[in-house]
Image (cartoon, rainbow, N blue to C red; front, side, top):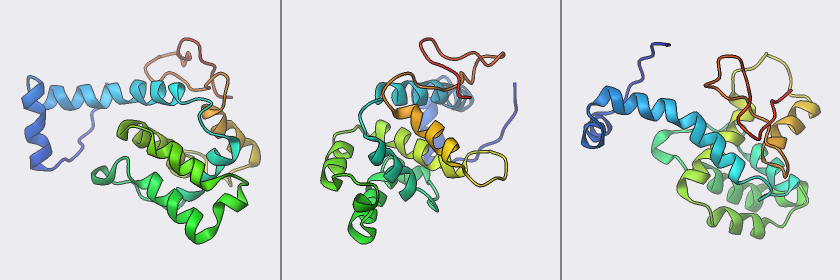
Length: 168
């Protein structure tokens, strides 16, 4: 087990003992459950967005710092601004109103996972290399129709989740 020491504000710390036996068990549960919930949520959204829509979402999340207080609100705001101010709907050849409509129909948790995914292309731990077109396409493949290609973070030998292929 890896020991970490995340910092949370007092109000958030008071929440965990309300639904878990104590702060530590609640924080551990949330931190350990999130990767599986994130992967399942992305899996369930496969095929929802076109190639151009996915590219636009990744594009608008460049230079965005995610904050827990605004979880689930970064992506829709960035998409709206990117379309209105930078004509990114034209760049990626999509119907901007349709994308905003799709995003408006998602739950807050789905939006949070989607913005973490889109932001992750730019900010995940990776070699210090320029993102190649092949790397970009592999990242987009996680939400395209077909098999989602993600490694199971809980598997010691790197096996993929049932029904899913490993990203190459």
